[in-house]
Structure formats: C-alpha cells, structure tokens
Image (tube, rainbow, N blue to C red; front, top):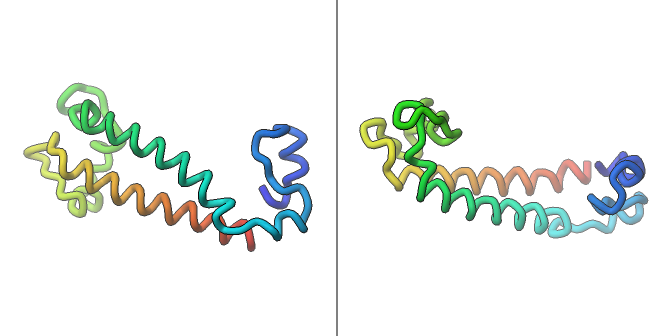
Length: 120
C-alpha cells in the first residue's frame, strides 16, 4: 500500500488513511501500523473464542455435518498434537484455548511483520 497510496486513496477515499507522500510514510512508527490491526484482530479473537467455547467446538462433519476451520485443522496431526486435541473427545475445551493462543501469537507476529514489509 505504501507504494500505491495515492492510487488507493483515489479509489477508496478516506478508508485506509495511508500516508500519501514519502515524507509522511517515513514518519510512521511501528505502533501506527501495529495498534489498529492488533485491536481489530483482538476484537475478532474475543468474539470467535466465545463462539468456539459456546458452539463452534461442537460442530464438525462427524458430529453435526457442519465443519469448522478448527476441526478441519485438527484432522492434521501437525495441528492436533500441539493443541492436545484428542479425536476421542473432540469437543474438549482445552484444545480450543491452546489453538486460539497459538493463532493469536502467530497473528500478532504476522501483523508485526507488516511493519518490516512497509519499511522495505
């Protein structure tokens, strides 16, 4: 977005608020990029966690015929093992929390990585 800020602003006025000059872009600090994205993600994370605890963990192709990304990921042992997922007890709450913590950490790292790409 940094290199095409003017074109993006013309197409989507006042939506992204990208700096329109190189001088303005060079004044952007890490938290200017990290804070809004992390706040939006955190809001989604809380809402999704509440849904997963109350309903989502009970949905899978095997249990209800409706799959979720969580249960789909748990079919892969590379995901299931670190989350302590047990296919004998697929609605256990602990793997949901572990999954969401891992998801949160990796998402925060991805958001932080965006600062590096913005400045490259």
